[in-house]
Length: 320
Image (tube, rainbow, N blue to C red):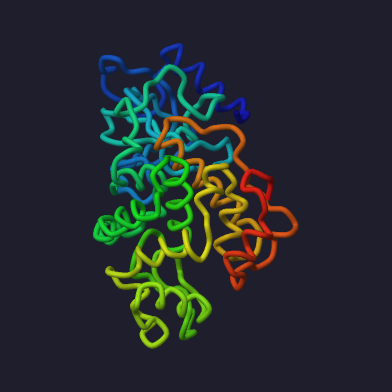
């Protein structure tokens, strides 16, 4: 829980006392709760994501009637931060709770919009990944196009539990924004990053090609084709590495090390995405998530064989 400024708490008292702030909205709808925003230039968006259309901008502190709240993009401002967004029917959209005058980061006593969470036992949908990752889903139509092949790859890889799905999708959204045909920006190497998993290096293109019976060394662009991008991600997750056990143990430190980049701030960002994904799939975030790595796994592990990496990483449930 974060600490709010006295100015924001004062605005809350004004709202509770019924003193109207600038731009008061229409009469309170049934089941709505009244709060107040603070500051000026606060955007009302069509959905709970920063890339959603702006439907209105509030000129100053405003009393808002909220009927539900939705988990979306994380917003940090001078007065606090929150990943929750207040739905305001009279304004036709959502206001980040970071700009609502309360001491909490989630509106007290306000139900979640929709009243439930996606079924973790079914296929992943566009709505699911948008709820998980918000504005990281930069090209929804392209993500939607690739989902059938990605869901099939997940079934083939036994990525069939909330923890496994969350780890896999959190990894891919940071590798490729869940766009099957992406090429690593600025990477002109013949065997540079391609596809969902950003396959890199002849030491990966060669074995992956042999596994599927295709010539990836001779035609590396196949790695970002709709036909092969998802199967290659599955191959890396289960053959080049054995990552499911790390997801089962809630050990994103080892998941990130298995992907093969040096430890740093990116580990924390991916762990946050993992937590968001679990929250969407299960309704809560479990304790015991490991976000950091041991010293043995802080370097670039890309060129290790599956056996070498497993020997270095040790017990999936151990820290790092």
